Length: 91
Image (cartoon, rainbow, N blue to C red; front, side, top):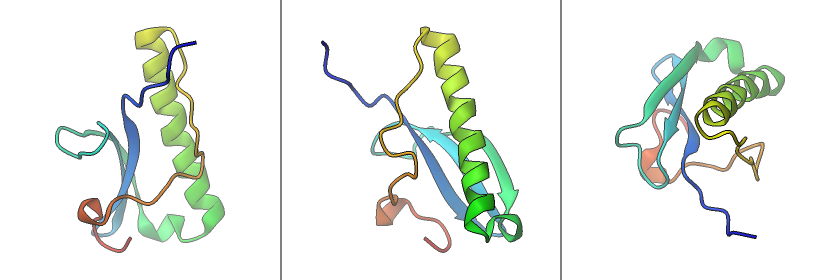
């Protein structure tokens, strides 16, 4: 079985009054692809935040499946904190 390689990641950033989702390459936000955004006021509750995260994860899964024929694995469905140098607004 081949080793799994991280080809990208789903990145969320607070930008002003928005919480923004991007598809980014590992280790950098350079060239990140904008996926969607939502007003921070709507995702203050963890349940609402998880629904937005799930929608963005499903969008990335669909795009990758369409391009490669294989669905990506999400080893950490709740995500992990971004490196400090990539954080926008409140972390």
